[in-house]
Length: 240
Ligand SMILES: [Fe+2]
Image (cartoon, rainbow, N blue to C red):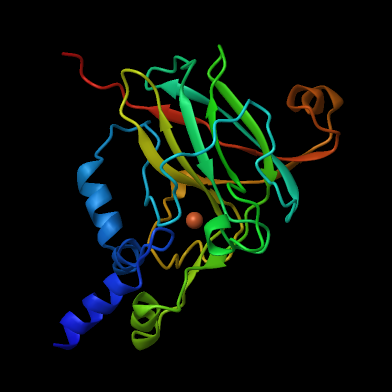
């Protein structure tokens, strides 16, 4: 009965903005297990990780270089990369769906009264060279919501609730398997103890300071600026 009550309470915590079942699945490691079984990709393809509970089905389409930080909370940072096929061919017209928490560690849907709607979300299309770039803020580590049954589970098992700093991506292109993944920030706390077991070494990237006027102009910012580069390689789908 305790088990049934727990699952009932988990369902009752869900609404159109809060998905406690996804959170519970993530915290139990079930999401990562299912992901590992369902997304076996060849070496060289970007590794997948958990979707998490904060994705919106309809991310707002934005132009390359657009600013997704609408509340300017956090250290400004350019995020850029190239989407390629497994053989190295750049993929123009690839869709890059990005979402992240603000400099305080909260997603827009967690703070509807404080953050602008669709803050730190965007759907970008790669250019002729397969490039995407956008203006955002350096992500920060954050705790998953602990005010529901999933939080009670963490408490009961003596686990912390933190995730290392990351930016979420779903990237897709015609003729390729899409990938749901994160870029994890090098040096972030909790890289070795992510509450949802999502970290893969291959997905960790540094944030670097670039003091180069030419590169700044490329991204429409002033030098020096902070930059995270995250290239994505997609696995071609079998035809026919
Ligand atoms: Fe996240």
